[in-house]
Image (tube, rainbow, N blue to C red; front, side, top):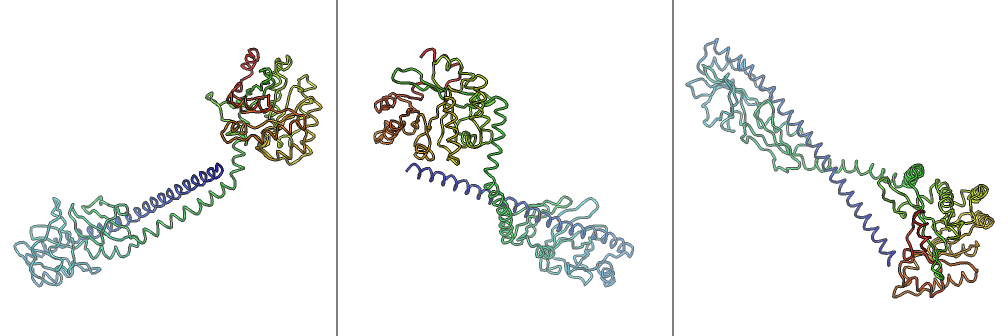
Length: 507
């Protein structure tokens, strides 16, 4: 059940992360598509406005020229000669509504194609001090049946009107815009035309012209909008998946390089130090030996959790260097307690991988040649990693025994090849893992495995140590089973060398 629960938690975590990533990618692609559409719609609005400004400039020039001609000819009414004159000066282009003139005191429209009565209801939109302005046609059924805005010029003779913008013109431009779905145009704050303007706020833009009273609201084409969103999503998804897969494949080298850099810096800055946890002989309640444990201090005075880095450290190429540092440091810091036999041995953890890639025995011989008491050391072979070279491990054990060092099997029953190690290698002691100690006092506990290790230790005539003891009940159960060497917080936490010396004096 615990393993299944652990798997389910990992599965849920992975699913949540994947879902969050997917939603984030959707949101990013949606935002990018909105940005792209906003840019394109804004550019279209600028194009519409630019075309309008060109027509407006041309219309103003033409109106000034016509007014000049009318004044020169002293035209004051819409005669046939006036119509012929307008034909020459006001040219109809691109099917836009025809231009026209309204003389003072004459309610007729005079144009290049004739004349007709002026329709009531025309609206003046704006006018400047020079008499130039904008005028909205009164009725869409007149003036070529288009909803039209005219540039106007008012003078002493009358008013001239030339079309500068029409609903048809905008509709034609809208048809050529593949990202546009609709448009709404306001002039001087009043709604003028609307084409397919079911506005979706997230996919519409507003553009207020700088040099005119026109305001454009443009709506994106829905199919183009969705297609662009999907395209951007796929463009983001595919390289992201590729990058994620590449990172996944490279995660081990990346982790390895990251941790190696941190371990090297810690060793160089002397951030590592040793703490020693006493092992108690419960037959006389005296310290029997200690285990040296690596501690890593952060720059702010806190400590890295050992479980967060130990598996990376054991696999790192710097581990042999760290192990050598631990050996030498322990022999220096505990020289007095070891030589005075306040404790018999100092244990140091070592993995099969370290033994296989570093000649620890040669280093021990070098230390012994320089007067270090290497015979006061014992090594605890951990089961966290499998053994690749049994021969090298045997050579290590033989070399240690020749120097007077002990070799223990650590974490019995929880790692790789525990039973095979007991058959293939000669140990001086077994250490019962704290996992067994923890469940020893549970209601469903049946310590048959511990009894089996006790029997093995007796058969091999080697010692037995229990670690992870935190309560008196655990200690009593272990003593009742015949295990008298205890290690754990119930007796003492791991102590720096100075505190350990004080502890030994008081015990």
